[in-house]
Length: 260
Image (tube, rainbow, N blue to C red; front, side, top):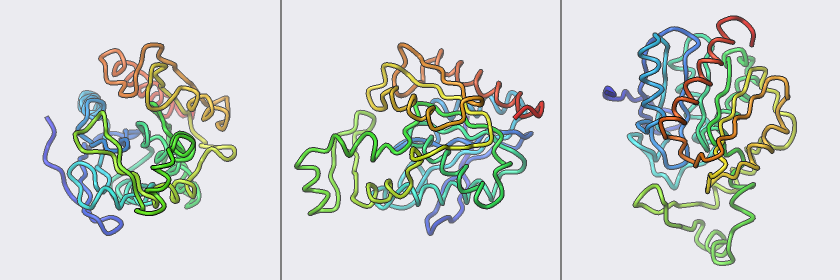
């Protein structure tokens, strides 16, 4: 059962945070586009942390879940800044970043920013679940219709129905422009830590070809890609959760034994 959140101000917004004290390396949850921190996978990770005495940290981006701000004002840069603020405020010792869908993109950008600040050693591993790095450029822009492009140009946004929410997804011109500025699939992504990717092959939102492309940009000796033949985008079935926990425990073990 989740406790009430606490709030910090980050990037000018009221950001909701839930955290569990425990040993490092712990896990830091980074959710997907339009997701919140009370989803099945995040709750399962909280249960794992409680059972194993590990730290666990999660938050809602602005415009998501219990955080303040308007969703339409969000960009990868803003959600990245908020995630870094939460990380710096609450994390002690090395952590495993667990990024789901867009959260995988945020996680990769966090590693880059932490390395730039001389703090790369604070990330002990990356667990990426159906990661969607550069999704605005890689997945959306090539599929935009003439009407959507016109709306982006004239109105600054377009909407489309969401299969995960009764509210439509809103995509802004700022999101696309900012996405181009945050691309990670443009060279070698040297994370300096082990990376484990879980990807469903029946994912209707993020094709597994994107996971393969991501692997091409990562140093091969530290990367594991697990393709789940019948897995979808959510990866929330009991067998998917079990795989996620096993992958996380493998990363924790590596970090704890000094192999990372």
